[in-house]
Structures are given as structure tokens and as C-alpha cells.
Amino acid sequence: MAYATRTRQYLWEVELPLEATIADAIEAARGIAQLPEIPWDTSAVGIFGERRNRADRPLDADRVEIYRPLRSDPRARRRERVEELRKKR
Image (cartoon, rainbow, N blue to C red; front, side, top):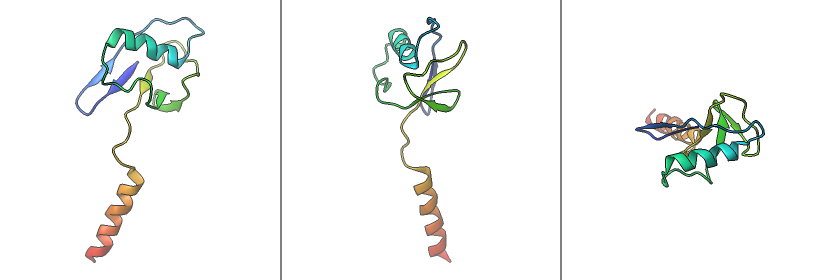
């Protein structure tokens, strides 16, 4: 299990049965971590950078990740930068 903030990365190793889901892995990590500031139930999740559903089953040694919400849409930020550059011309 993995979760990262801008200043710190959290990693937890959890033991799960073969039929366990991503949701099961999250619950196991929550029991170890005891960190209420992590958005355990509401964040997007994935495996090795690929977004997945909580009902999906991870394979042995997969890194299940909890993703932070984006502060702003990267596409919108890019559009704003391009617009600013056009105004300066």
C-alpha cells in the first residue's frame, strides 16, 4: 500500500488472502497506519500508477496506491498559461 503527500510518502506492507480486493488491502493498511487524515474511503485508487476499481484484485507484490485529489485540473492550468502568453504578445 502506498500514499504520498507533497512532503512524505507512506508505505505499508500488508498480508492478504489470494481473493482479497483493493478495498481489503486499503482496510488492512488503515488498521496499521492509524492516520485519519488520509482519504481512505473517498480517493481514487490504483496499482502501479494505473487507476483501478476497489473491487479489483491485486496480484502478489502489487503496489496498491491511494491517490490524492488534484488541486486543479492540469489541462485547465495549461489553458490558462497559454492564454496568459497570448495576452502578452
